[in-house]
Each structure stands twice: as C-alpha cells, then as structure tokens.
Image (cartoon, rainbow over all chains, first blue to last red; front, side, top):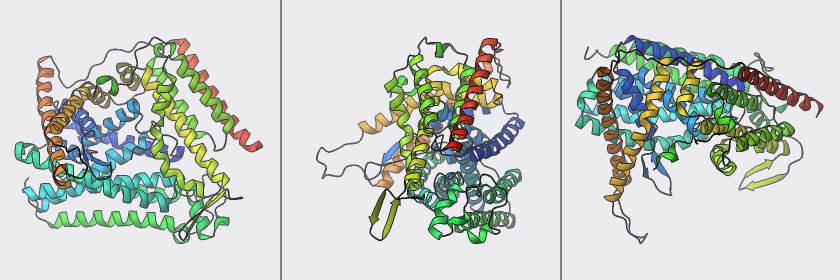
Length: 307
Length: 270
C-alpha cells in the first residue's frame, strides 16, 4: 500500500500533502494539550515496535504471508491523536530510509496509513466497546473488525489516489486494491485479534487506561470534514483526463475526453451521470457518509457508559 | 537480522557525503518533484536525468550495483499501472485474446507505462542517494531546518533510536518460534497448526512486543525524568548554511526547472 514516487500526479500528491499536514498539526495540538510528558517516549518506542512488528509474519498458502500494518493496535494503545503521529513517523521513516513509499507520495501515504486507518479504527472500535459496555467481546470484535476495515478503507483511498492521478483507471484500481487488501486485511485482523487477546489477559489496565480510545466529538468533526472534502474534491480533480480516458474509450465516448489539463468544470455538464467511474466514487463516498451518520446516531441513542 | 541490513547509510568520505544534510534533503525532494513534473515520453530528458543521478552515485563512492539493486523496490508497484498499456490510440502492437476478453496493447499506452516506470525509478534513485549518504542525526537536523514540527522530529528521533532494539526483539521472538516449531523434510507431511492457530501465535508475539515496548517506554521515561526532562525537547543550534551551498542549491533547482521547461518545449516540437 506504500505508493512510490512517480505514481501520483503532482496535483494529487500536493492535495494529500496539504490534507495530511493539516491533520498532523491538529494531532500535535491535541497531544500537546494533554500535558502528559510521558507521551513522547511512548510514541517513539511504539513507533519503533510497529516498524519492527511489521516484520512479524505467519505463513499463508503459496509462499505468501500475512503481516501487520499496526494502525489499529497503535490506536487502541495510545488513542487516536497520538496514533496518527506514531503512524506518520513510521511512514516517514519507511520512505526516508527504506524507500518504502515515495517522498512526494508521502502525503498520500500518511493520509492512507495514518489518518484513514486510525480514523476507521477509532470509529469502529469505540462503537463496539460502547455497545458492549467495555466487556471482553466488545474489545475483541471491535479490534478485529477495525483492523480489517482499516486496511480495506486505506487501500480504497490508495486506489482512488492512483485513479485520480491517471495511473490506473478507477474501475480497475479501486476493485483490484479492494480485493487484494480484503485478503491482506484478514491477516491484519487475525494478528490484531491475537495481540489484543494477549494484552487483555496480561495487561488489561492498558485497555481501560485513559490512553485508550475514547469517544471524542472533535474527532468526529474532523472525520466528517475529511469525508466532505473528499466528496467535493474528487469530481473536480477527476477532470484530469488521463484516468478517465480508458473508461471513456470502453464506453465509446472517447471524443468527449479531450486532452485538457486542469479544468474545474468538465466538458460534459453532468459528470456524475455520464461517467460511471465518478458515479462509483461518489456512491462509495456517499455510502461512507451514511455509515458514519448511522454510527453517530446509534451512539447518541445508546446510553453513555463509563465517564 | 543484522544492523547493517536495516541501516542503509554507508559511512564513506565522498564529496556527496560531506554535503550539508539540509541541502541534500531539499535537493532530493526537488529532483523528485521535477521527475513528477516531467511530461510523459520525454525520453531525452529522462536519459539526461538518469545520467546525472548515476554520476552522483559514482561521485558518492556508493556501489552502483547496490543502488540499482535497491531501486528495484518499485517493481511490484508497477503492476498497478499495467492497465495503461491497454489504453491508447493508433495501431495496435499486439492483441491478446483471453477467452472472451480482448486486450489490445497500444504503442502510446506502452510508452506511457514505460515513462511512468522510468520516472518512478529515477525518483527512487534520488531517495536512495539521500538515505545512503546522509546519516540519521543529520537527517533529523535537516527535518528541523525545513520546519517539520519539533514533536514529530523528536518522535522520529526516538523511534530511530529504539528501532534497532525492537527489530532485534522481533528477531529473537521469531527465532524462539522457529526453534519450537517442528518441520518435516518430506513435503507430504503437514506441520504446524491451522492457519487460525498460526495467526493467533503471531498475534501473541505482536501483543507481547507491544507490551514490552510500553514497559520499556515507562523505564525510558523515568530515566529521562531523572536526567532532567521537563517535557521540553531541546536541540542544538544548527550551524548556518554556507553561502556556497546556498548558491549551489539555487543553481541546481534553477537547472532542474530549466530541464522541466525544456522537456515541455520538446513535447511541443514533437
């Protein structure tokens, strides 16, 4: 899922750099506000062990192996804002030292692996622990589902970025990423389940400490804002023709896709109607928004526990 | 796993190694941005840039084969760009019939794909050059100089310091698992438990790794406190950048810009 340099157009790379920088700054503000000096060594060492933990793997058939991204575990252990910073550092080191992921593409990679994976985990995990009133199955189911979904949604975002850059057509990139990572995500989910089971039985205090994920309205607002930005921006960025050419050709309206550069209003008046790719992207995002709203409503209805 | 496998920095005394880390960071990013800005099919410019990068590699005393071998890391990702080959116009090169599916390879699709691969490859070489000629403390200085937030630089610094330790921890755990797992020489006999069981074991290892790292961080924190840590991250003042390197940096970025403009002009002519 680490996108190397050269695969993203400069516009997409810049856009996701800006988004990631904004969110990292918000995360730094939030972490600093807690005035907890022990956070720094925890974050540094956790980042180191996530880097190392990504080397843990187990054999799956045919020479492939399941391994870990770690965003879910990080979120559960140190909470969402600190986890965003931890994952950002992991992605940064991987790009700077190991060329695993590009420097220009780092904004997008941080967005997928730090912002999206952590947000998805926060939403799912806090939802499950809340409806289970913090008992064991809630932690375990929440962590497992969150781990799988965090990989899946992050890979969808990567597919979307590739499609917007014109590297890979949306109707191939997004489903291909989704299918491959649906399988990879199972490995992530199983390891996360094992890890959380282990932590629950040896250091249950870690799961209930104030470091853990708590439901914060601020996080929701940021999440919704992000989804909104994506919904608004994706049709605009998509007027970049390369990614659509292939689809256009398949659909027999190649003559509509002229080699324009960056135009805010496309030639065809209603891209959402004319173009199946865009419709798919928008439908996906609308679906995400609906799911988020359902979670929000359920959380409001459900009596608050703890606190 | 040995440390030299993780750390790709090579301690040499070449002119590139002696350059200021801040200059190198900015210059590498500038090269990568120019690569991304280059239009497709500007082959002369790609070759020219590849020439520059290879000369820099030779100048930095790095083993050229080592750099080329490491640059292959982009190969798997090229798969995502394969569909490009099948879209384009003009005469087809090759028609592939897979059952009912007809795939046509177009020349311009193929060259688009190749351009993308080359651009990505050039960017990776620039990044490898930066990582193998700049040691980590200098890279941290450079990050601070380009205004990466202090907290983030501090976390990255700590992460770097403990990364080797944690990798060795993982290595020891994996060795322990290996030494407790029987394996049969004949492939017909299945060894090890079910997939779920294997995943559970690995999960336990991950869980124990994270608990150990948290407990370590508690100890590190007390050690930091006892040495006067007050929540403020302090760093040494960085030495000023010499005039010569600033001039060099500006000149290099200027020529990169010219190169990009040249590539677009070339595109217009062609």
